[in-house]
Length: 558
Image 1 (tube, rainbow, N blue to C red):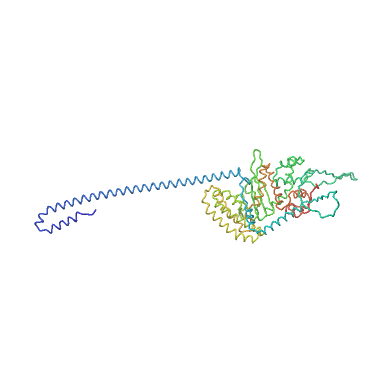
Image 2: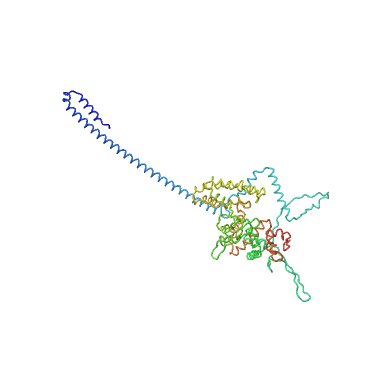
């Protein structure tokens, strides 16, 4: 509030001084009283103004305190809201993780499964289907004709029997015409043939008895031929038929062979072909490119069934199985040793020993990576579908290389670098972008971390055209083990597991070379005892081009 009294008093005294002495004398008391009144009024006004200013300051202070309290309350509410939101997000993620685990358990217990897992769509089939859609009608027709010709060529190699159906004798004679021909394919049921072997004998002039030599046998004095041994082995190792089921099947044929006899033939066959198995292990260990995998193999123990492991090591011309009670790195080390080359496997640490210290380069499996994403698709379908489409593009490039017959060539490597390399780079950028957005315990985070952890192995195929992008060959080889695990439940002991691995190796390799494993085994069981043949000569791929070209059954059962 401005000072109003001081200027008024100054004006009053200025007026008073301008008057004559008589007026000044008369107005002097009045001037003093007015001055005192103005001064007291100013004091009162200043006091009221000061009081109002103090009240205003107090109000401002109270307002500031209220605003501060409101700000604190808002901050506390915001912090509490953030905590609630974080807890809600944590609970939602935990719920999703729990749901994910429940889904996996339900798939394993009730869903469609392959080795107790949800079936993953085959990327190779999708690539084949995509390529077919790109072909013209003329190309499709040409391929159909080629496939039909190839099928007919195989059918023409089957044993042929000519059946002539004559005309009715009551018909009158007439001019003959060329017969009308048609083809019927008929199945002749397998049978167990009883062969009576009569070996002639005579007495020599010196009185010694001479006896004709016995026919070839798997074991001296044995009662079962090599073809029967081969039938028992192949039925179990390729058709996953347990020996107990085979016993019932033989009984239906009128041949009561007890399971103990079948078991003896199975193990005897493994003992006979053991030298070939060791030769195959040496061959696989020296191969430049090997793919491997492993699966549980239950083993009967005294009190319970314990877990063993069936391993498989596959090359371009051999499939080697090996049994071990352990899943540790000693098994790959025993098979591959200190050999060099590449090893195509999944992320199992048991292969670390042979992929370090300048030994084998480790290649990854895109099928394993794709399977993990597929099983976590419910988390983020858009992201997962994009990643799976990129992996599908990698398989499509491999399909093109196979179609153009450039597998393993420089042209194949150039195609990979041109089309696959950008896809791989984009895929890993996407994974790095999204991996931290999901709970570390979730299946999708685990699937993405698998890809990141295996990045060096998964990109090895971009450096060498001979390195496949997957280890599907070894995975497919383990399917029969999974079927046996379901049908036969277990092997009797560790030695039985080792012998099963031997016979699985030989039968699977025969099938790889499009050779009938029964024919190979029936011949090899006899050839092992003949001079002039080594274990390497009797390996399926050598046998097919050597002894197998002239091999005939040991017994004529026609």
